[in-house]
Image 1: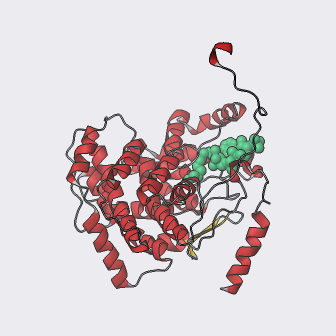
Image 2: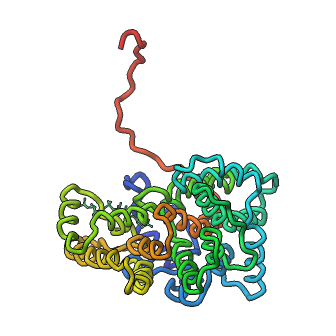
Image 3: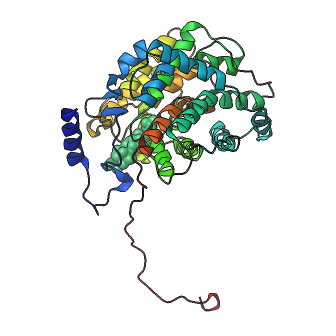
Length: 393
Ligand code: ACO
């Protein structure tokens, strides 16, 4: 413990800015202490509460990862079974919420629908209790409901009846069941479970920070999670997975990659699925997704996407590798979802279905020692001057 503390202190010393230093995008600013997630950006390593992501994807399940993040330890079997039971119990939405979702324009982006429904769900929560236990209970219920919100909106926008949650399936398999109306093959369920594990948490990313800023005012968990959903939607963050697929469709063929990249970089365009604020090496999640994408793409009509991505990697490595710009998680996740038959605009909502575990875990942890987030800005507008009446301007 003492060793871990001194490591943390050394890290704080090495990356912290001095008070008054200006850091655009808060780069290098240490804004919280957390025992949930550690990224070694130089080595391209990721750990949840000390467990390597490769190990967790291989051996764990999304439900177990939720427990790990909320309790900062792995569950015993009875504890895991209890959490699985709670998830199954809480999956269904209030009937009024489903009616509300039906009223949303079918053309809405599913992330907008998700953000709106999270907000709506707060109005059904009449429990005035604000204790850590009550908030953990809300975190479990919200996480259980996220797949139902996304699947319900998706079916209603296609004029299909929503499918009630399955009482037996895992979190990942049940989402696919509610989306497509049939139980997924075991391998497909496993791929979705792995995807949820890979996306569950990522230290002080933009959406987690956004949700913590809201939580730090002692607002409620629904408001904080809505902030997270809003921040995740942007293409510089979670929205990149949707943008990657559009990019692949535009590039179309591996032989077009060189010219496409050259033109995009000449226009100072960011290449989606590359670069990261913390990783200056290959994102370990991208490596795992790449393997799933490779396996799923073999001998299918979608293998072209994989070939385009592979070529993109080579070209970007040559052009931008020196700058520490490598593939991130979003480069290959889209190909995987596409292979599973998932519509492109549901890619980011799937990210949210996983990350709600991380947001809520960080919120609950932050509230244990809360302090209002309130940074400063450098004022560089005009100096004090007299007000001029509208008629004289
Ligand atoms: N393509 C081309 N150039 C890039 C890219 C990219 N994807 N990423 C960074 N760069 C370049 C910038 O142009 C800049 O170059 P310059 O110094 O010559 O001007 C330099 O690298 C630093 O870039 P910043 O944008 O300042 O770096 P920052 O740490 O703010 O950005 C970010 C990180 C936003 C992820 C960026 O790499 C990016 O926009 N990537 C594409 C979008 C993306 O894939 N987002 C998903 C990230 S993972 C996630 O959130 C789940």
